[in-house]
Length: 348
Image (cartoon, rainbow, N blue to C red):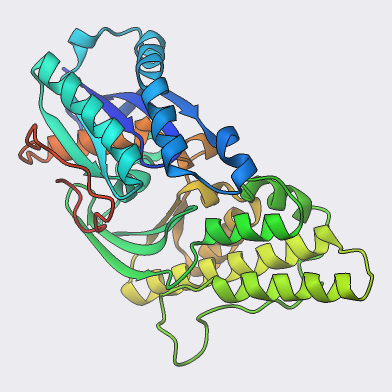
């Protein structure tokens, strides 16, 4: 008989509640995935304001939970375990989700699993493509994180091979969008503008690709600064900034580095599967270039559909299902949020 796992996500500006059914054969079925976003409240600030995010989570938690159970056609009494993002993320935002999860787990007398947000972004792929091959390589690309991860066991054996030394890829998108007077968050507007531009119009730098650089680390501060200088120079000359060309050239630089390093890491480690996840995984150029390069290298590519790439409760429920199936000891009810939780700690 399948076990019903409830997942709660509140690490940043999305309140997510997901419900999955964990079957005896190891598959995990998505039953509900409800999200309430506060992104519009942050847009005028050009980034997430922690206090606003925390208050939005408080207001959205109960209504989002009700929608999830209505969508799944389940009642609270059907829940067998509760999983929640314990970190990393914004401290106040995490506390809202953790507090709610502890309350639900205590009231229902079911196990509580405080899990890692980053591992959740990998686990969510199993909802679409089935169990993960082991080992596999994960490229996690979002507004706050850019990492290459070796996954030997999604329930407890994740090793970081490389990460960004400055801006995350999604953060660079937001900052470049601001330079081009495009809306926040910057990923979708830049992707849309780039469709009408020439990706070879401007030779923006590829960070951390020199012979002395760490092979699997990333840096996007340099390309962001290069875009700023290029735009400033064009404006100083009285020229109209070619937004489409700048967007396409910037996007090409980012996608080039991300995919080249991911494929190289998989090839050198002899790993045959690459999972690309996180909000930036929905970017059209990143996914297209990843497909092209993985095909050339004989690597299987798995990218969850866009809805699953962004922050959501379904990914936390999926990870909770895998952790519970592995027989790990549940978290204590005095569980605390950890804003700096390292990726190799899957369960708190």
